[in-house]
Image (cartoon, rainbow, N blue to C red; front, side, top):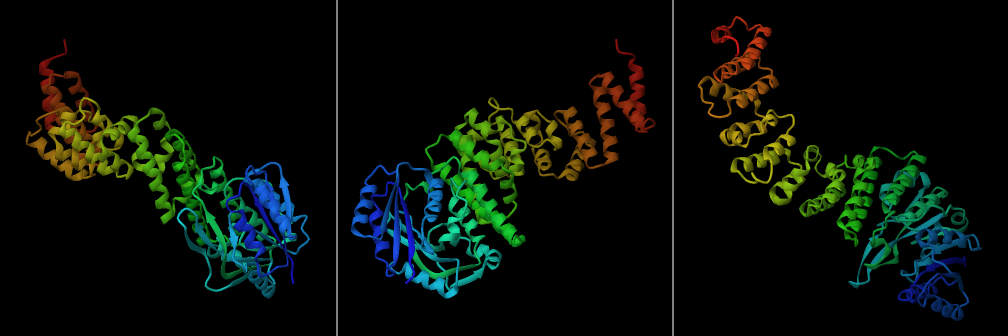
Amino acid sequence: MTKVACVTIAYNAEKTLRQTVESVLGQTHENLEYVLVDHGSTDSTKQIIEAYSRLDARVHPIYEEKNYGSGGVLSLLINQAKHIRCKWLAILDADDWWEPNYLERLLWFQEKNQLDIALTGTITDFEEAGTSRVLRKLEQPAVLTRTQFALAYPQFWIYPSTVWASILRTELFASLDGSHLGGASGDTRLMLQYLNKCQRIGIDNSALYHYRIWSSMNSNQYDPGRFEANLAYCDHIRAFLVRHNALDAPKKDWLKRVYLASIGESVRLALGAQNTLHEKLKVCGEIASHPQTADALQSTSNERTAFLDMLRQLASTAIQRGARTDFDELPPILRLVCPRCSAYASEELLKLCQKDAALLSLFLQDDLTSLALALEERITQGRYAKQFDLPGILAGLLPENPLSAIRDAKFYRKYPSLCTALIKGHHIEVLDQMTEALMNHQVSYGTESYLQLYLTLAALVNQVPAFLFGKVQLAEFYFNEKNRDACANVLSELDEMGMGTHEDVQRLKAALRDIGPTQ
């Protein structure tokens, strides 16, 4: 009967370790040695290991004085493997357990298919809720070469994402590099190393590993190095696929979803941590500003939606609270959540959104036109007139719109339909409307601003006759306002445009000569 080495590294595991050990010692495949390592525990873990070593000769206790963290555990596993003489190695976490036939089934599967790694499915057990569900389980067994596995990686990637729930060749595992494996996803990075050494990979259609979930587990807490680990995680997957010529377009798109899911989890944990709002913004801003994040967001997926929704909620909270230091951390987040609106967002706009929930919602939805229309509505209603320069805010939001030159709130109130149409981009219709109003002498307020707007609009839509008509009207306005110099300047411009012989231009020139030089 094949002898298997089983390894558990335990740290402060007194609540669960007995069930873990019993599941190993109670295996139907009894030919095993069990290396039980106390990793610098401060509870009764060491005493529990000592007790089992006295009860069962298959237990080999090892006591480490210091805990080296998650990366240290993986390095310790590799170091332990170097001293193991058994051909096969099975790793079990100190708060998990095996089904009684775990070793028997996987050894049979391995020997039948001549595998370098035999994997099984996982049952997740939620400790506080007292419930469980199958996390991963195939309908049919899969046996693949390393190249076949790489080509089908998105289908099977969750199985070798941990060092547990498998039986490994001890010699191959002992040859791995255990450095730089700290932080989240260290298991996956280590297993990708291992897969690079495998010739044949098998996944059984069983689920024999029980993975216990605690709300206080390290994987449910935010680690400052987690985002760096997210990047390394995807880099290692990409390198594995490239190495085996398997990184085609569908896998690139899939890898973007994996990246978004992993950084989404980092954001979720960061938002749930006992951090200040400023710290949360800083963490999420770092993630948001990374080029790989922007690239991943080019794909459309549920992961993208979930990620942006979390950032949108964080931005909403920061804007509502309104601290200046929080505003300083917002730009990289806003560039992802609302790229169009945030491109022109001023601090004054954010302060206005703080007071107006409807504006904030439109801003974060990145609905630039609706946001501008809502601002225009508030201008015509006279809202916030004493607190904010709403025309200035609107001009900043629409820098290329002809309305950006209008900073007079009364102008908006006098010509609401005109302003609304301009915000919607109905330039030709507005130009026709303004031409009719000028010809019928219906401009009742802000004539100079009206004419300057008209000229800007005519130039924008390349309507030369309208532009020349507007210039004549502007010269007439300055003449009536007794602004001789301004009128003369416009007439000079009309001369340069070849309009010097126009009847109205000639009339205005004559009128200026009759007035005489400015005193």
